[in-house]
Amino acid sequence: MLKLTSLRIAAALALSVLAVPIPAIAQKKPHIIVVTHGQVSDSFWVVVKNGVQLAAKETGANVEYRAPEKFDMVALSQLIDAAVASKPDGLIVSIPDADALGKSIKAAVAAKIPVISINSGSDVSKKLGCLLHIGQEEELAGKKAGERMQAEGVKKAVVINQEVGNVALDLRAKGFSEGLGTPAEVLAVTMDFTQSRDAVSAYLQKNPDVQGILALGPAGAEPALQALQNAGLAGKVKFGTFDLSPTVLQAIAKKEMDFAIDQQQFLQGYLPVIIMDNYIEYGLLPANDTVLTGPGFVTPDNAAQVINLSKKGIR
Image (cartoon, rainbow, N blue to C red; front, side):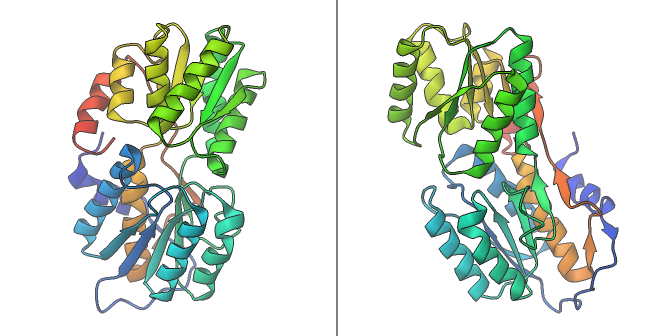
């Protein structure tokens, strides 16, 4: 893995000059605003913000990170609108719901503010006028998880969705059923740990024949893990999740979970700031519409290495 000090060099080498209008060379460092749907208190988004902050330090750009207090598309659209009104040199956004956020993103593009999308929105990024998308193809990642469980003999599985209405999570669930070869039931939970744990516990009692569980993020995986532990099923039911957290990694190391899908969220915070800074100052962009940061799988075989990186705030 590249050392942090060399990430900027690696990113710069990946940039290619395209036939795009060259922005005027900035006389001062660019003002870039990052607006995402993920609360900074969420362990996943803490790592994204760490990437943003390192890139800001390395570029010297003036970078602001903004997010709603909870998963709320109205609040998120308002944050994007406020960012556009402040006329930054660049805008970085996540797009969990294009119907709710499309108008706000198009307003930024109409105002000639360059926009890069991250994490969610790979399917609509270009349509909305974004320069590019940085993240993973969610449906493909879900399909790989389904194929993995199918290979383990899982025929009945449930998907735990902690953010109903997040299109990216819907795509993960859809891909999972495709890979599994049979429709997986979706259990809707909330971001509240106790509510989620109790919902999973109730599901397990009603469905003792379930063979596999896929959580769509740590906020669903951690309560599900406790529900499995309480029922004496940890390590007996095949269990995977999207994204990483310290609790998830420790559970994988103990073989209480089988895998986590790693989309390298540190890079989802780091790379867009690096790329946006280079675009604003020099007119440079990667040649591809999408820069993939995942999926990769963390399993008991490589969990220890990833845990060490997690302690440094980059996984």
